[in-house]
Length: 193
Length: 174
Image 1 (cartoon, helix red, strand yellow):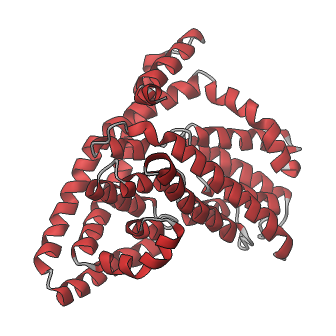
Image 2 (cartoon, one colour; image 1 turned 90 degrees about the vertical axis):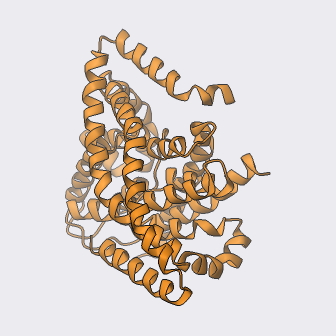
């Protein structure tokens, strides 16, 4: 949270500095109250949609949809993680991690991902990240979500004509960004010692 | 295609509900429990947003955001990225809360279906809080040397930002 503390105080200091130079003191003074108002309205308008989706995600998990998706993903993951994939439990955690990410189950994804990461770290040794562990982290830092629920809810509350029409754009972009991350990983692995 | 996208929510609700029901899942209990879980998510989102949104609004009102945008405009325009999204790209890898505050402020100020609003939404939906994920994963398994994980992840973010702008332009503003 230290970065965030620095960012927060920094933003305020920069705003004050600019306000005193540009003379926009009235607007800056009012902006704080407007921001608080916006945060309250945001949670009220977006909160309902987040709850609705969380409910649907839970149905997917309980009906075994997540488990079926993770079985589908296994062949792909075996190619990406040949070492970890050799151990059944790690492969299990890996495919759970990716399928939960796809379905937007943030907590389940993190839990499964950390389980896989710990097993990979144990299999390697010491405090240096192995190639496959780095790859797992890169895969998790590049969001691969089928339904970006929160941002669609934001669009909805801001009066978008069709809030979900950004889905194809999000998929194409995510796919490119994940591919770029994995390509960068494959390149950097060779030069990094 | 557009009718399908308009029906995204009802179709998913009905489809998942039906398939779960056929597999003998107690659909309604799952919905309720999940919604309660969603409420906890909202509660977790609220405090950081309450602190970060005023900060972002002040930054905009003071003119600092415009100055920073003006500085980066030539470079970003060359890449086809709307300069207004600078603040979002800067905070996205660092803080999920700050990024959500920046994105929803952009969407509100420019309109949900505008070039800036759409680009911000796609950027937000297709990237993650990189540094947070790296810290959680490596922290949890005692890794000190992250080697090339962070550069590779940031590379993915950069491509994500660029592609978000490119795809939005292609699909809606060509």
